[in-house]
Length: 60
Image (cartoon, rainbow, N blue to C red):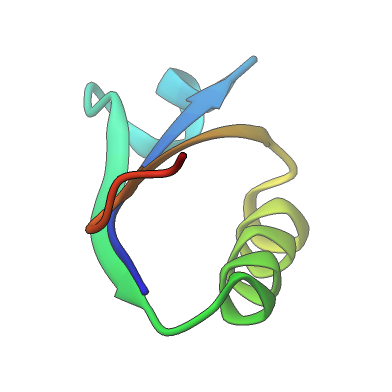
């Protein structure tokens, strides 16, 4: 399970969303739900998002 999702928008993000740099910290059960969220954000705000994933367990 991915614990921390940091979503940072690029482009005209500040114009649309104000001065915030990150939309939200969210927790998702799997990457499929994450992709749904990213697509939803992209369609709603017409912005590109970059994602930083931090796993609860170490990846070998």
